[in-house]
Length: 388
Image (cartoon, rainbow, N blue to C red):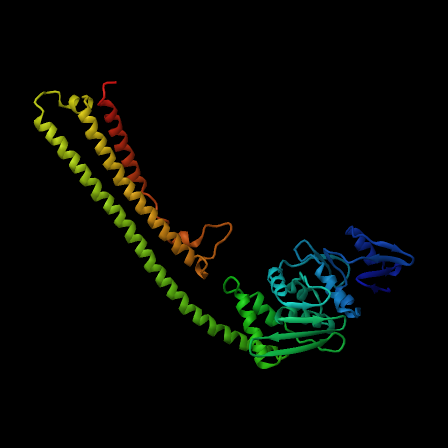
């Protein structure tokens, strides 16, 4: 068989009939040529990619080819035996993180929007020199802060405020560095949301300090040690925040209970005064129809007294509602401060963890029901005092 590459297209002659038949079975479009077929770069298929990398002399074309691939689980790869396709593994969780990092770097080259999952590429490509070197180059696009590349070479710069380090990689001459363990630690070992950003900065600083990117095992060990020291500091800060949060929670709970206690005391004082007034009426009333007098008698004076009790009751409950509103504003401030902390990451499909731990102050339903019942009864009695 005679397979030749032109750009990112693969030319197949008639002797490669097994692959041609397999491609046709997958409904992959083939363009007929004088001596065979032309297979264009396929978005959802990984076909002879190692062979392409080994034979290509243009790094920009290689990057372009793989940046156009679909790294979802619907894509397929041609097995090493070359007689069947399999779905790729669903391990592209690094794709968006990698894309974000590369977008924030300074990339000087033909392609700057590099949407690639190195997890998937590392699992699909073989151990040939150029395939592994290509993986290293893509990793350097994320590790470095400034990258410039052309068809044959890559210059990666690691820059900090105090120092910098530069590494040059020649596509045809350089040996693989095997950087994937560092990449895997940064982008796949997730201790908390966005931990890769901290790890990336650590890796850059250590590379600058060492002035070396090739001793991967030592670099990774130093990165992990530095990360543990940083996380230890963050842990102390974290527990300090949790203790403060507990104090804030106790303060909210105490103030809510105080508001409820004030409502009860004021309401019972109001109820006591109402009872005293009723007692005076009962003692001074000389006739036998006391119940009819209390519930059905008319008169402007009675109406004025009842409306005064209604106004007093409304003010008591309104003061309670305003106190709860003030507590809710305090709750919102505390929530805003803490919700972005590690413990309180929000999930688009779930309620915020903050709300699960600290409930929002609400007007008590039982007290509201009691207020409405008494208010309704007083209003009925108020309207009954007028001879309509």
